Image (cartoon, rainbow, N blue to C red; front, top):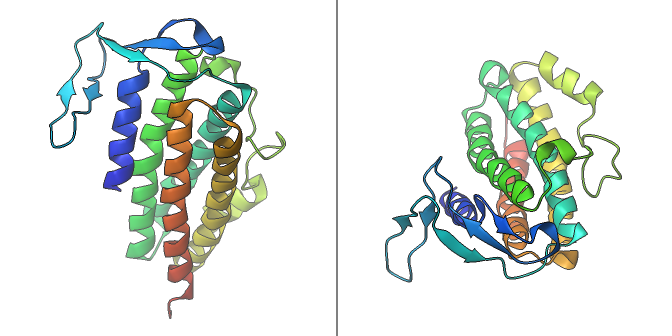
Length: 216
């Protein structure tokens, strides 16, 4: 979705690379020399590519435990969605389901990269993550191993139906996690990410429900 992709670009522009006080307070975000960092322009103005080493400003709020919990929970949650979407090309029969999977990948893969960079900037590299999902009590993935195995074994219409039902539940869990972040978090980047999850995945839930209700 264009709005989600634009939001992710704006997030990456604010968080790639970091020097400063770390997870406890405001930090200066600095463009790295790797992938290009796009700096959004003002109203009606085009964006530009940041220079390596350019200071992109400071975070506007202290990072809290809620912010870290959200990022550390949402990354594995998104990864499971990508795993599910990766099964679609060889198993689905519906072009609409294939299109839904493509949109999920296009939205969630860059969000994983953005949140991973944010955690690294906050002094919480991926290896520090405890696993599990925020809002899920640390009890593992929303979709169980048994359900994933059923999805892997399904084909055609049966796969389409199971995929949509499981992904709706998966998206609903993400919306719950994002809602908790919006209530308890303070970091502007993670709050923007949470708003994007609520909006984007809410729209996708409605689309998937319509697909399930459509005549065969």
